Length: 117
Image 1 (cartoon, rainbow, N blue to C red):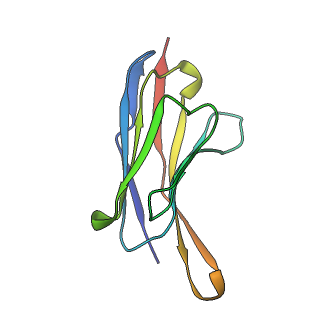
Image 2: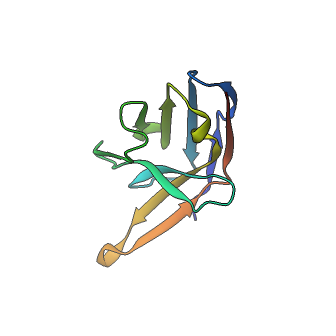
């Protein structure tokens, strides 16, 4: 079992920046960030493989940067030029790839990001 602990959320004005962090309690493979705004479905923000390959939602491209430190089982999300539409609970996601390429998925408890206009 892997536990994920997020930090770094908060209240920021439009145009500002925030950095989210997520620490996994053990070794994981792919990691990522998702978000869920009120009355909306959870959506992908960005993912990163253990080797460093990244994938971004269109809404995050050019403004957000995902990175990780494998030695510390940590993933980061640097968010810049924040907009009120970025307001959501941000969830850390991690996957372990086991035998037969079976994936076990883990989620953090979520951290609130609120962007004021």
